Image (cartoon, rainbow, N blue to C red; front, side, top):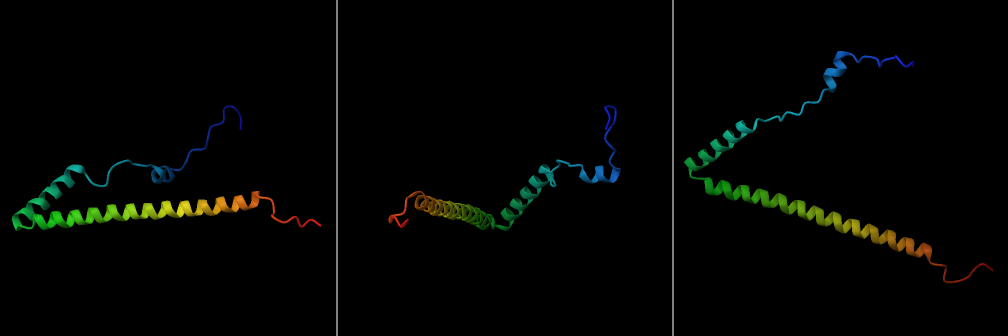
Amino acid sequence: MGAGASLPQLPEWVVRRTTITRTSPYDRGTMFVFFLLLVLLAIALGILGAVIKVATFVVLTMITVVALLGLVGYLAFRWQMGKISRSLEQRSQPPSVDDRY
């Protein structure tokens, strides 16, 4: 390519398919109104306490699951690092018996 050569132009369908938009799939105002209507409906039906209990249970369950998965991952990582460390220590130590002869 010479100094004045330009890059080839991409077809429009490639440009259109690869354009990334950073818009949210849900409008925040619409979601707020939706949740507000759900809360008002729960208050009107007299089940707001039960809804709050269920929501609390779901949130605490998710937090517990994430914490337990993190703990299991951490312990598995430590166990693997211990195995690697022991393996490297065994390789670096000279043999206990000199069997060269």
